[in-house]
Image (tube, rainbow, N blue to C red; front, side):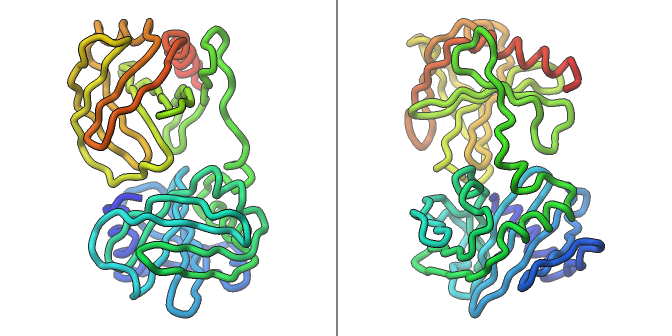
Length: 293
């Protein structure tokens, strides 16, 4: 979650004030509220309050985020290591974005898989531990999703990716949350995952991702080496768990189609990725997009 999103939610929650979602039943102990983000996607929040802290499940379009609010949390803007434990399952490590005594965590696939009908969430961040003893996390999630006209928890757990013939282990996703008629491709890697998107002008957007990044949105300078060649300097954007760069040079785009290995140099580290089959993945994305899927 970006600091901007936390600020918007704080403004909506405490300044303008949310409104109870019409036609959506709130599970016991939860309040389902609709929030106006001034032109943004339809957003709804499931709020649960315990002594000294609040837990909110925020559904904004296809994104789901958790907010923990408490006077004990730091007011300074920044990133904070966090763990989330569901009942007595092993804790999941995440990076929280914090501001004004609120921290935000994006819903990760491991966390989504463990929610189900579980009862107790334990969140530890910024040297504080908060226990939310509720038996209706999954129901609250689905109620907020219904309010926001977004995928339910069960739908989040369905893997929308399909193998791409002739592209090795590349997978095609035939839709992107909140982006109509958009397709993407992904290849999981040991150091970073590789993500491909075609923008509205059919230009390639190349990305690298790791679930433990979860950084604040910012512009970054990166270097990209294709198959051991001289690195190319590129401007990129860091968005949550991804670093994305638009490939405008047709020569580089063609080299990427034939690439077997990429080496990224970023402000926060160096990462390698095997990408054989990238050209076939781009072709599958293009076909997917122009079929209007």
